[in-house]
Length: 512
Ligand SMILES: *[C@@H]1O[C@H](CO)[C@@H](O)[C@H](O)[C@H]1NC(C)=O
Image (cartoon, rainbow, N blue to C red; front, top):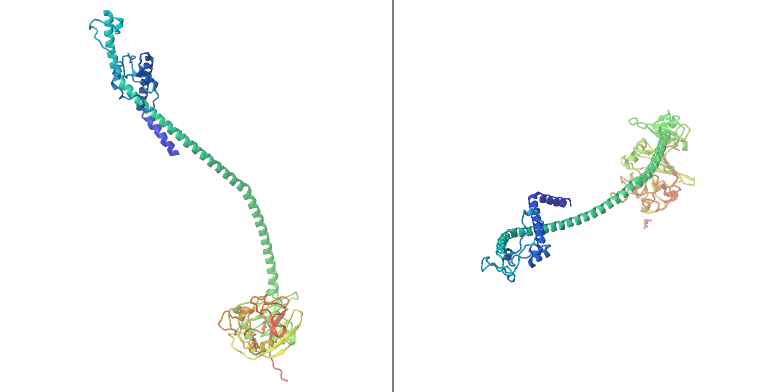
C-alpha cells in the first residue's frame, strides 16, 4: 500500500517535473479558449459547420471531432473575417476548438474592373467607383484573413488534439485517483478491523493479567504456604523422632562391665541380668553387642533371632542376613537395655559362635492368644560356613520337630521336602534351596518372605512376613504362598505367630 502510494506520488512528482510541457499545455489551452471565445463572439458570422463545432465541444476522443477527411480544403474557404489575432495567449477558448471551415457555398469572384463595378449582390445594381474600391479593399483583406486563418487552423488543430490528450490524461488520473481512494478506503477498513481486534485482545490479556493471574497466583501461594508449613512440621517431627530414636537404640544403653566370649560365660562371670552385653567370641575379631537371656532355663542364652512386633523388615538380601540386622535391645526406662528388639544376629556371627563347640538351640514362640511353645535342638557338628548349612539334632519341646522331621500334615516325599535340617541358607537374591535349583522362577526365599534354610520349601518360616492378628489367607500373601511367621507343626500354614525367637547356648552334656 505504502509502495503504491509512493509510486503514485512519484508519478505526480514526475508530472510536476515536466513543468515546461505543462506550461505549453496551459498556453495552448488558453489559446484554444481565446479562439473559441472569439469565434463565439463572431458567431453571427458562422455558418452551419461552425455551429456544429460549437455544438460538440465536449467530444472526449480526439477523433470525435470532425474528421479532417471531410472536405479538408474547406478550411481555406472561410468568408468571415476572423477576430484579430493579437497574441494567442490572450485568447480564451473552449477545450475542444471549433475549427472553422467546412462546406461553404461557392463564391463567384469578379474582378472589380470587369464590366464596371457591380454590387456583390446583382440585384442591388452597379456600385459606384468608391464602392468598387471598398470591394477591392475588402477582397484584399479577405485574402489576408484567409492566410491568418490558414495559419491558425493547424494550431487550433494541435490544440484540439492536445486538449483531448489532456482530457484523457485527466480522466485516467481521476480513474486512478478513484481507484486509489477505493484502495485506501479498503485499507482503512482493514486497519480499523485489525485495530479493533488488537484492542479486543489487548483488553482480554490485560484483564487476564490484572485479575485472573493475580488470583491464581494468590491461590497457588496459599497452597505453597500450606505445603511449606506442613513440610516444616514434618521436618520437626522427623527431628524429634530421630532424637527420641537415637537415645534408646544405641547411646543411652550403658554397656555392662561384665563381658565374655558369649552369654553363658557372662552368666558365669556374674552377668545374670537379661540385657545387652558386649561379647568377643574370637580375640581376632572385634567385640559386638548381643542380647543375653540370663533367666530362661538357667540363662546363658544368646539371642540370634527375634520377632515380636513386625517393626523390622526381614525380606532382606544375602549380605544383610550375613552381617545381621535389626535392633539388639532397647532401654524402656530402667537405665539399661533389657528389652530385645527384632533382629537377626547374622550368619557369620551365628556360624562363628556355633563352631566353638556343641550348641543348644532354643526356639520359643507365642501365638496371638499368648500361648507359648518351645523347640529345643542341639547343633552338634560343624559344616562349611560358606552356605551356612543347618545341622541340628536332639529335638525336645512341644512345638513339633519341624526342623528335623518336616511338617506332620504331609507324608513321604512331600514331608521330606519340608525338612530344614541339612539345608543351606537362602535369600531372595541367593538361591540354595531344593526347588528346581538354578531356576530363578522357583525360589522359596522369593515367595516366602525372608532368609531361611529353605528346602522345598518349609515347615517353619521364622523370618517370614509379620501378619498382625495371626490368621491370614493366600489372597493376603504377596505370592499366594504361606509367607507368614509360620510353624506348621503348631499352627499350620495360615497362621502367623505373634512372637518367635531363637537363642543359642553352649551345650554341656550332662551324663546321667
Ligand atoms: C504328595 O503330594 C501330592 C500332591 O498334593 C499328592 O498327589 C501325593 O499323593 C502326595 N504324596 C504322598 C505320599 O502323600
